[in-house]
Length: 372
Image (cartoon, rainbow, N blue to C red; front, side, top):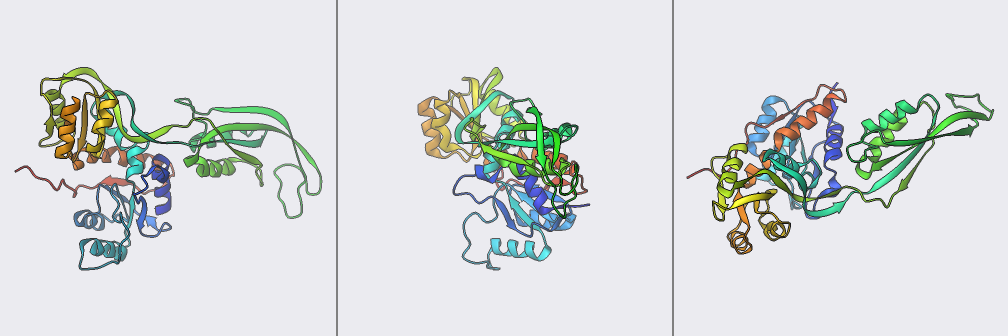
């Protein structure tokens, strides 16, 4: 069995809900049919001609990109322009295109967490918080003997997590009553007679992005034909999400030494650095892609250095004035580092579906910049 495009979308959005995206962004399905089968998935930063050719060559019917192929509204799809040609070719080949952009940047466990861990940062916190996750209380009434199956189903869908503790629920015993009507097929009792059942009130906490999946999993695991449940919005503080990360280096290192580490761990030919090479670095901030505008934020956060890409001249001057080191590892270099882990996440979740669809990282994509 192959996964549908919609199933892969749901897996990605469990990690990086589209609600986390910046207002100007355009994540989501760019091209294609959600109901189509995803024979395989190709993961890339951009929908380039080379990536599209690779997808066609390996038979991938879904390309998951970091950067949207359609970021701003298109006045038309012109075949004499590169974007129009690519979109038309994807449609003709039946290749769906999905983008997870600033929502993946901001998500807990997303691109910036991956980048920070790859560079050896510990005790991570968000550099610039942008949103707080909404939480819900889910209450369901389960006949005695079936509470564990429903609890496990909820936990498998991501409900019931508090910190690093899973399966967090509260249950209380009680008596449920119901009278099956005509045309019903009750799990307990008989049509036309009031049934009294020993039941548990099972309640747990669910983040908003996982609510629909949790409800589906709960209903599937529940033995009743009609499931009684309630959903309540909570004022509890949910997880924060946002741009960049700040963390502590396990051991202090010079700016030059950290630049060499960034170059080696991200597999880069070169990086650019701002600041005195011998200065000692204890705390580092990271932001995949274009993070030069976060120089001031990183300095206020107590970072000794900002590791990002696309640093402008005036950003570099501001960093010097604030006493902040900068390592510019490029837009491609700071984002491509996350693709292998994103691919691994997809394959783990696809295997759990279960289905035959698998993901692979594009090998045709390269950094457009070359060393002179």
